Length: 214
Image (cartoon, rainbow, N blue to C red; front, top):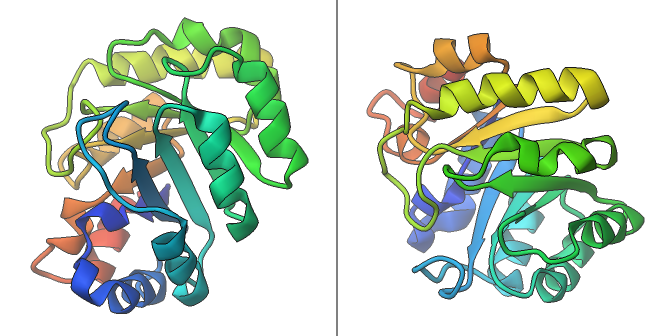
């Protein structure tokens, strides 16, 4: 299991320190939640802050766009050369075109689905993308409880991936922790995003990250 701590739950007064710490603690990706206050009811960070994160991170960035006007935001963040940029299928009128654009920029394209969006909605794109991010909470805020029905959704998505593009990864974001990591692994998840579980763990970042590497 790859672990991508979400810096949404980090201490923004000590962001460089926290990013360095999760990288040293063994994370695989640094998950960056970009929210515009329109697609989701929250406003987070832009390229100035993420550029500072990229300078101190020793692991690749995993940028999750929760925005309107995806093309605009892809252009903003592409110069930082993240490993992945994911966008929401619910917001994008021309997903295939955007996937091609992200790939042309040397970035691995990924698509995100909200909890209510069926996995079949991206079946026609699976051959073109590198990862599908399933939200297991309603996007916009950290610290929410995991929605159990997402496990069945993972299984449905896994079957589609095996049919069309076996190398495509499945990422899950929201309410992930030691209590449900085994179930996620069994269902077919490859990457987990964990914010409050990692940054709020009393036993430290290393313990939290290692507990998710099942």
